[in-house]
Image 1 (tube, rainbow, N blue to C red):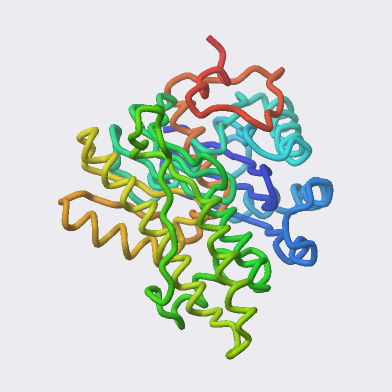
Image 2: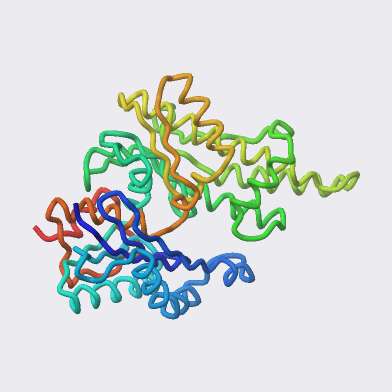
Length: 348
């Protein structure tokens, strides 16, 4: 059972964690949300500079919390793809340096694989095959998890990711950034059936539609048109809570229908949810209710493992290291990389 120290710097959180197999020994995250809120989104250069400032203090805290010295660490890992290149380079360079200084193997980890492994941190008996619904600010995918490093993308968004749609609708309603938690909280005060919004279907050349792909650009535009219509009326104040609740309910229905259909069609009895949108209460409610009807098991990681963190990266790295997978020190940062190509990160 490998003990791995991992660094996560793919976007706007500086994370360092130590995980032994699937047991979290420490997990420290320095969030940059307050820094980027004034801009309404993540500014890559600002994010990179803040990672440089925070990576050493977070590293020291993770080691202190775990109560370990370097003799107990079997490998050093870092997120290497996908993400903001400048931010990724900070984590990769730090991890490579530590690996060289302490004579430890280095592992580059795919960020999306980390989100898959978030479910392993609390469901330690979880084993492939299963379906992962990965929903975040940059990704919305249905993934057939066949084994460590062996993944098949069965469905994905054709435009905006679910988390991206939350941010854009939040900005449209002048609610602030990040949009997901704000809309989720506001939706509890609104009526999810107040407004009928389109769920969207991906048409195919033969006249049918793809049952697992999703689209959120039309939904986002529908909310824009609704707001414009309501503002023209000016009879009452804008029903922001009802709009938020209707939007969130629609997103949850879209994701639930596709995940359930995909699991049933491929004979998978477990759906693991990963990514920041996995924290959304509407999605949790719809998926749990639907899974119960179809006798499926649905797994949501704790909220602290939904957003970006290094524990999920370390968990994935531990599994890879146990199987003898090691990355070359020449490995660089990749802003884009398919999850299906993850084994290209390792020697041999």
